[in-house]
Length: 172
Figure 1 (cartoon, rainbow, N blue to C red):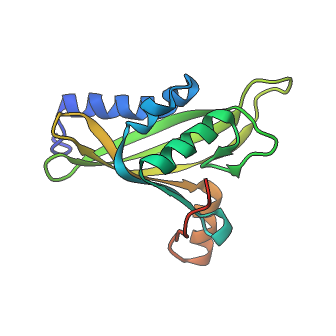
Figure 2 (tube, rainbow, N blue to C red; figure 1 turned 180 degrees about the horizontal axis):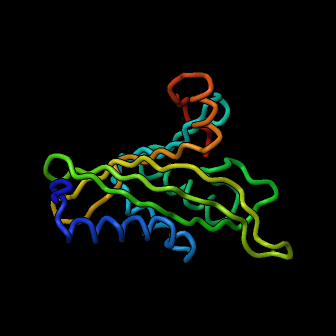
Figure 3 (tube, helix red, strand yellow; figure 1 turned 30 degrees about the vertical axis):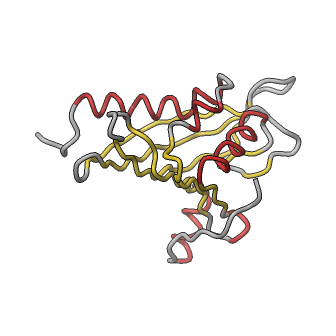
């Protein structure tokens, strides 16, 4: 059975990009995390309500986002964290689809929990990543766009029978 045009090597490299998208932040390697994205890439949190929609575009905004994620001040899944909390992200059900040459889409279910401190870990949020990836001329895969859709936002949109929308940037 042929799923699509992705080779076994493409799939291995794409799965590594997904693993690094969570592990590099855990390791405090923000610059390397930003390098997983094209310089003009878009990362957004899509919400059913305006205040929960937020976007980050381009290298500088993604670098600011990565720093805030590492400091525990912000997370795409929940937005601002007060007080700051270290978070752990676990990705499951990563699914990849090849498109025209050098393009792929991917989906994953992230679960976000707090870690560290005096309190036991606790669940913060879960949802779905919807990603567009592109293989650069050197052969590496990078994110062109990444959208996080919170489980609660998806459920609210389904109840209202409306598509999910996004709004303008929240200052990083």
